[in-house]
Length: 110
Length: 115
Image 1 (tube, rainbow over the protein chains, first blue to last red):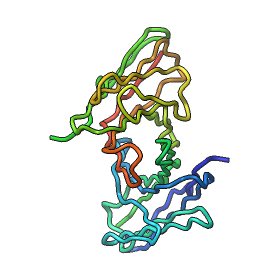
Image 2 (tube, chains in turn brown, yellow; image 1 turned 45 degrees about the vertical axis):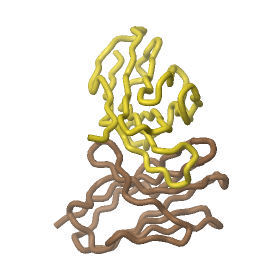
Image 3 (spheres, one colour; image 1 turned 180 degrees about the horizontal axis):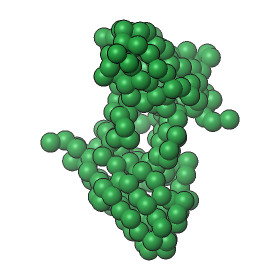
């Protein structure tokens, strides 16, 4: 079993749709959680960190469930520009080890 | 401009010919890391460094070496490249090793082909 598993996708949604991605992790020692965005094999860029209490940034909401060991990303009112691959990242802060999920590809269509 | 740079950006080489991919950051970051990305897969960590002279293996270290002699540079060395090391490589850095919410800043990537 992979240490970090994501919905494989792809997700194809119309503009304005709400879409949710899930990610599960197996290492309970994991301490920090993130969602990164990657466009067309370019470098990943931080979308948002995921805090224990959940957090929101505009149309994006991230949630963490430590008991069930999963994180989620909700995108509301999808835009064409949201088309990208979304990578779930789990960090063991003390050890410095960083584990990425395989990514979920989102395509938003007009 | 704050950035992570990698060189070369593209490289085609042959099996067994030693090569080095350089990575440099100008942000005084403590933490640096190397990843490889293969089609359909996320990034897999090769090596990382929590500070100068401190390096550790990631998930896929076989066939690679690194060094961290100074804070800004973290070169990736392939002593004897093989075709299964054909991949897209990313270098990344973070401000503080051990901090809980540590954004990683990535370089533009190096596309390596080993024939």
